[in-house]
Length: 262
Image 1 (cartoon, helix red, strand yellow):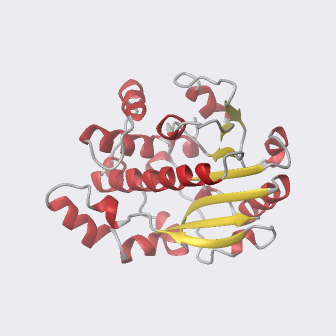
Image 2 (image 1 turned 30 degrees about the vertical axis):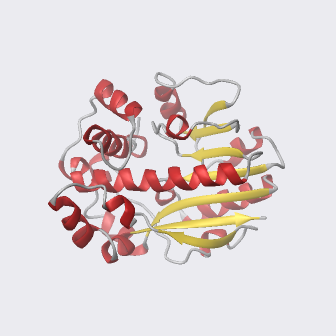
């Protein structure tokens, strides 16, 4: 796998780490895959503070998805840039059709650990090449998660993807995390993904910009490090994370935006 593909091991490690410690997120599949793959990480990629970010981010996405699935029982689920994430097992389909999308090399690896069925499907495709969207059922409602992937899209690629999705589906509920412009610039010099050979990423400061050409509307910003999840940390780590890595620092680096088409 290339550099961008290999970045999937960073959140995989983070989720396995917090799951082993019994905090933030329970993810036995991440533990299983990490133990099996043994991909060598070094430096900040194995930082426990980054692992806490990865666990919290996924927990926020999971909770949002569960709520949307209850409110939209007929919607299909679309997870763009799924990597090796086990959201399909953590959340469950609850009767929804579910599509995980990622590069062919990633899906090939993923199929070693996950099996498709009547509801669950894996689509091998570069998400930036929008032809894959036509393989999805047309015209119905979609709940879409884009976790840890928007920063690898050039602005025009992200705009085009969101436009195509808004055209394809009758209704859309989308949650997407983004780097800020500051974080994107800083990533050139100091980011764990550099260790995978990735040095060019993109940020979003105005949530309206990615959907300027689509019928999606920005509706809400979510916290990546909510107080309820910080409180699951133990001992002094709770106070250190809250003071140093959450709040103002997190907002300077990461944002999480919700969009809708009704």
